[in-house]
Amino acid sequence: MPDVRRPGKIMDLATALRNGSVSSTELVGRSLDLVHERNPSLNAFISVYEDRALQAAQQADARIAGGRAKGLLDGVPLAVKDNLYMQGLRTTMGSRIHGDFVPQYTATCVERLEASGAIIVGKTNLHEYALGLTTDNPYYGTCKNPWNPEKIPGGSSGGSAVAVSTGMVAGALGSDTSGSIRIPAAMCGVVGLKPTYGLVSRYGCFPEAWTLDHVGLLTESVEDTAILLDAISGWDPKDRSSLRHAPTCTHRHLTEDLSGTVIGVERDFFFSDVDESIAERTQDALHWLQDNGATIKDVRIPSLRDAVYALTIIDTSETTTVHQDSLRQRPEDYGPEVRFLLECGALPSAVDYLTAQQLRETIRADFQDMFRGIDVLLTPTVPILTPDIGQERTRVGGKDVDVIESAMRLVGPANLIGLPSLSIPCGMAHGMPTGVQIIGAPLAEQTVLNVALALESAQLDLKY
Image 1 (cartoon, rainbow, N blue to C red):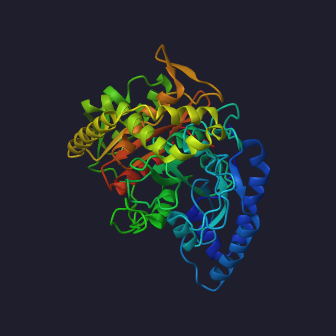
Image 2 (image 1 turned 180 degrees about the vertical axis):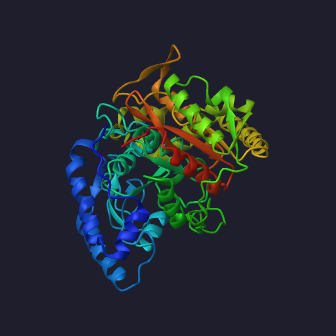
Image 3 (image 1 turned 60 degrees about the vertical axis):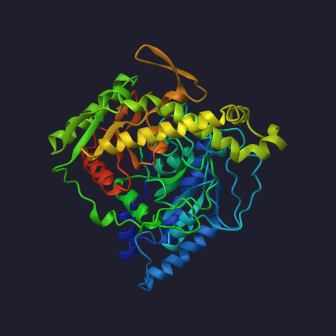
C-alpha cells in the first residue's frame, strides 16, 4: 500500500480556497513538494513548471481575495500528459524525436483549464508517443506504480495516473486511443474517463490514430471527474472531429439514485478470460448495484468477436501513417518496441483497413440496439492482474496470455465506436487496485457518472 498523502478533492480544495483556510500558493507549494519528494522514484513527471505555477497561484489568490474567482478550479493544481501542447513549453511526446519540440500554441483542453483558473504544475510521463500501456519509457525513465514500484502503472497515461494516485496533483489530463486512460486508472486506483468521441477537443494533442483518439481525465473521485469534464468539453471549431455540442453540466446533475437504472452485463466477451479475483470484484459491484436499486440485465453482442481485429488494423494503420516520414528518415531514434509496432502498421492493406471499418459499423449498430434496453454496460476494466515491469506473459484461467493484448481487450471497443467509458476503483486483487468499467451510449456521460458515483459510495474495500 502506498504512502499516499492527498491534498483533497477538488470541491474540498475550492471550499478551502474560498474560505481562506488555504491559499493557492500554499496548495501549489504543497503539490510541488510532493512532486520533488516522490517523482525521483516514480517518474510521473517529465517537466515541472515551478516558477510558472507559483506565479499563476499568486494571481489566483489575488482573484479569490477580490471576489473574482473564476470557478471551482481556480487555484487548484493539475497536470497534463506530455503529448498535449502548451505554447512555449517543451512537449516531448515521450520521444527522442520530439525531445526539443516547443509548440506555438496551446491545446484547447489545456487552454480551457487555465481559463478556469487551474494551475498546471507540469507535464506527465507517458509511453513513447502514447504507443503502449506500460509507460516504460526508454528516454524519460520507467514510470512506476505507487502501490508497488515493481509493477507497471499502466499506460500510456501512466504518469498522469501516478500523479493523481499519490496526491501530487488533484487531477490530470490524459489521452486514450485503446485504453490509455482507463488501464492506468484501474492499475493505480483512481477514476479515469474517456468521453464520447468528439466531446472534448483534440486540437493540440499529438495524434496516435485520428479516428480513435480521445482526450480525457484522471482524478481521485467521480465528482472531480465531472468538474473537470464540464471545464474542458464542448465544441471547438479548430478540431474537425469536434461535436457541435455545448459544454457539459454533469457536476450540477450528479446523483447516486439508481432507481430505474438498467445495467447490462455481456458475459461472452467481457467476462471471458478474466482473472478470477478480478471477476469476483466485478460481481461484487454488480450485486451492490442490484441491492441498491439497479436492474441487472444480461445482453449479447456477437459482433464483439471482431472488435480486437478491427481496432488493431485501424489503430496500427493510422498510427503508422502519422509517423511515416519520421520512420523513414529517423528509424533509429524510435525505441525498439515502438519502431516494431510502426513497422507492423505498414503491413495491412487497403482491403484490411476498409474491412475493419465495415466491422466497426456493425459493432456500432449492435451497441446502438443494445442501448435501447439498458442504460450502461458494466465490465471489468483490465482482465489481468497488474503485471511486473518487463513482464510479457501472464496466466488467466490456466491459459498463457500476452500481457499487452489481454490488458487492452476489454477497453478497446469503447474507442472503436467512440462511447463514453469510465474506470472506477473496485476493491483489491493480490494487493493491487482493480477497476470496473462503465460504458454508456454516445453523449451519456451523465448516466455513466451517476452510476459511478453510486458505486463509489460503496467503496468495496478499496482503502487508501
